[in-house]
Image (cartoon, rainbow, N blue to C red):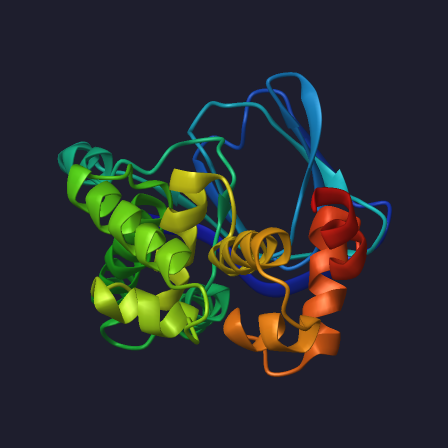
Length: 259
């Protein structure tokens, strides 16, 4: 891989716009620091900051500032014939927005590559080659992690955890603790949980507690404050606020309707 042009932390005016019907003659990697309006499949799409976008050689390039000055890190590069297989093996999609949750790391790599490119120290070619390989390997890892399909093991683990939450909603469940039980990072655990159940883990914990409270309210004549404590709440005010947010009724109103 060879960089042909590169820039770090460039900011352009509101009227900034790129129109290249036949592309730039090489590959183009963009790391957005601001919002940008891109033309994807002939449709205008607003991309957010911390988005990575890769143009394939020969692909039309249309993008511009959107509601603010356009800011990004970027580099143009070419591939030798013997590098094509390696690049394809990374399975990084072209013309597809990839949201990065650790974008400062990638921006720092581009900063170092920019320094190497313009100062040209003795081994700059070798350094740039290693930087580029690391950059795209990490982009591939970020993409594969974010879009990795759920495995049967993950599904079974998540179903078991959810069962525990609903059977014991009064416990002090935390995302960190639940993620630790199945050896996942909190971020990745939350992503998989929402993908599997179409609800965030924290909202599901709240729903489990509210369902548990409904059981108490309809079957047992005990004070609201005691029900709140039995459902894992430290104070009844917080419990009543969440109960109404989920059901549109106060606990007392719900009890009258169902008893």
